[in-house]
Image (cartoon, rainbow, N blue to C red; front, top):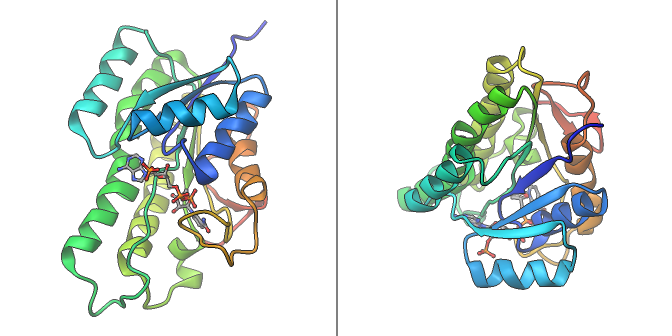
Length: 232
Ligand SMILES: NC(=O)c1ccc[n+]([C@@H]2O[C@H](COP(=O)([O-])OP(=O)(O)OC[C@H]3O[C@@H](n4cnc5c(N)ncnc54)[C@H](OP(=O)(O)O)[C@@H]3O)[C@@H](O)[C@H]2O)c1
């Protein structure tokens, strides 16, 4: 019998991340709901009311939080088979490529890209040791060159970089039974997506959950929307 798998979902306390946690736990996956604010994480965990879900404090930009995760993996207090790099912000919608303040661009890159990169650098080596892993990067259509425009530059840079990271990491682990893919959820009604978005969180999470649960012969280093390949 195969071992029960554990997923770590960043930004799991609300929005698409929360829904990914809910769907994974409903699929009998153990879920570590990671939240930068532990109180919010605990509340979200209580809302899910599923014994398969636990919660940790993890701000993806916080050295101490990352170090603490690393130690827990080292001691095998935690095992992560599935990593969902979901935590993200979008705050430059009113700016264009010529005028977004540097601090804003940098902060967005720090959370959306460096957060995902640093977490992958911590978690993936343990996946390599276990010879199993799935990494799902929650990207965006705004990271696709085919959909590029001048608006919201920091957010777009961060998702383009995340897409490049997906391909690079997929190449790194291609012989390790680890599958690394990116997906765009489409425009989803969350705090980030706003009220006018076309999709609900269930729809937004569906492809990510499918990528989390891929069989060993699944795709590696690809970009998806609605379970179909999407143009980089
Ligand atoms: N909604 C859309 O239309 C849409 C479209 C394309 C892609 N996406 C992507 O989907 C992902 C989830 O977005 P969402 O729509 O669900 O947004 P959301 O409802 O605003 O949720 C964002 C989550 O990220 C967390 N977060 C922010 N900064 C963090 C940090 N430094 N460390 C850890 N967690 C942090 C937030 O925590 P707090 O609650 O503490 O703030 C929250 O849990 C993002 O990567 C986003 O780019 C969304």
